[in-house]
Picture 1 (spheres, one colour):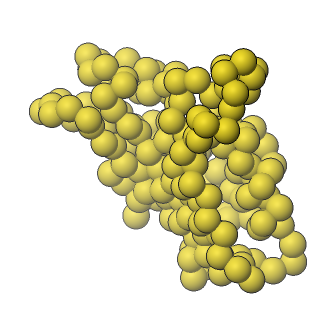
Picture 2 (cartoon, rainbow, N blue to C red):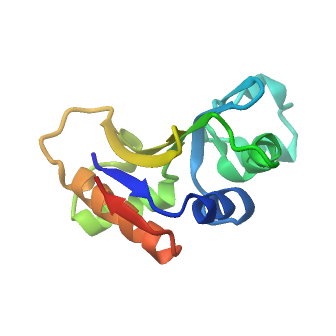
Amino acid sequence: MIALKINNIKTFMEKILTTEIFDHYLVEEVTIETFNTFSIDGHINREFYSGTDEEASNASGLSFSRWSELRPICLNLIKGKRTPISFKFVLHADNATKEAVIDKAGSDIEPSLLNLGVNIRFTKGELILTTGTAYSAFTLDKSAEKAWDNYFPSFLESCEIDNQLL
């Protein structure tokens, strides 16, 4: 687990809310505090979809909604002249990203047994990202965790998002 401070909040917010950079990430939860507190539970409600819907087939196998689906809602809640009091986004890497991180780590852990997450928290004028790794099976192999902690700062840099390790 590492913590990163985003140095240019405006640039980061523009990229996360108006570009597709984070669209492949999965959303566990969102909380946005403005004139009200808005909470989004990213867990997919399968009962909402009928068995034949194209949407149901797109959501099949996923536990969480993609950022691309919730990004416009978050943008509408955040945009405006006033800065939110605070917000928190809890995102997870999709399977392709997990596989790439595991492969780079040289680990043999099954991607389904691993969650690679990032908490994005804005409060008191600071934007802090914290990486996290959760295993659903016991392992002594922490190489995937180290690879995720190395991957995320380089991902941000490749997106031209200035950050510093705390």
